[in-house]
Amino acid sequence: MNAQTMLIDVEAIWNEAIDAGRFRRVLDDPGSARKIEMGLTRDPTTSEAEFYAVDAVTRNGIKKRVERRHVPRSSYVIQLNEFRTLRPKTREGVCALDCRPDRTPLRDYSLWKRDAMFLVTLAASQYVGFPNLLPYNEGAAFLIVPSIISPGRIEFPHRPQGSVLSRSLLQDFLAIRKRLRNTILFYNPSGGSVCFLNAPILPGKGGV
Image 1 (spheres, helix red, strand yellow):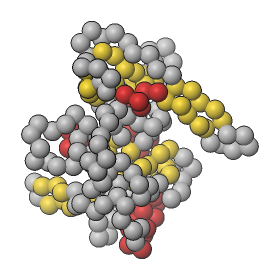
Image 2 (cartoon, rainbow, N blue to C red):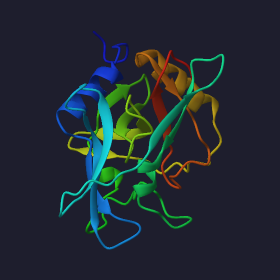
Image 3 (cartoon, rainbow, N blue to C red):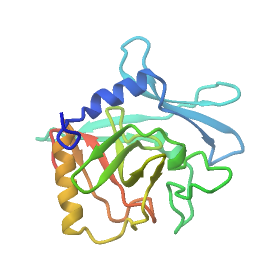
């Protein structure tokens, strides 16, 4: 099958990554000097995906609330996820993806320290799917980032997140959506990255 038409099952990729323990992050606790390990794992009883957080040294659990409410007369669910408060805070004007590959050492939350989960190849462009630092929900949540790939090298061109949603970019988003099964793609012009154009992808019936 042509790489430009092949469907990508992001939900299957997501579940395989959870089972392989790839959603594990060790980060600085924003409220103290300790290190926190957090991410997604499987409930040993139900096998459902669930958030977790522990002290990286003592392995003591850190309790946070995850609450959900259904929006009346719709299929949408509102979620309160206190685990996301454990994410590192960044200064205004500083890229939340720590986009400089030459930084030594790379920060724990850097895009360059995350596993690339999938690649979408279009007629004139390519996009790499990365996991969120801490997902919005257990079901799946990716960032898709434009890329330039050549033999032995990958670059993420600096296109400011607040840049205008151009016709070519919108066409790319529509083409990406056709390639990804059961997903909804969003564009947030005021997202956390001040350097990288990126768009969140969440599970759903499909749409842009």
